[in-house]
Image (cartoon, rainbow, N blue to C red):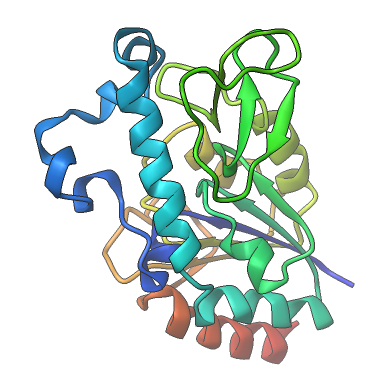
Length: 229
């Protein structure tokens, strides 16, 4: 069974109603993303950061996997599918995907500020000031913030190197280190890119561009993969 590695970004979840920071509006229009998604922001205004992620968690609870998520689950019948996602939602898991690696963390988890290995599944519950781990340290969202290392990138690189087919869905390929994964596929590995927007594909010698949103794009991808592989 061929190994199908899929890198997903914000466009994967857009049809589920997941809003980006700049789409959230309201209260958040007056803030810069660095104020709620960086170590500096956490140090300067912990309550604001907690409020931001609590709101995002509540939003996620109301969202459902879309046709794109479900289509990737269907591909597991014919391929060894491994998803690497830049998204912090859990929609791949809720759709039924069995192998999902989160590069930037997961909204439904908290972690200790004293020991990043202490991770807790919290579902859609809030994290409040005064919620502590066993070591007595404040809990924070288990999210990789701007300026922080991406520990899962090394595992993602190993997975990518083993890919027989590599697919990119809903990401502009401009955010590193995730964008660099495309350069780690082995020679001759076909690359499929699904995105409704034009992106820079001139750096890839062997790719097929599917100019669709995630839902329709995955349907087209399924047809192509089952035809050629």
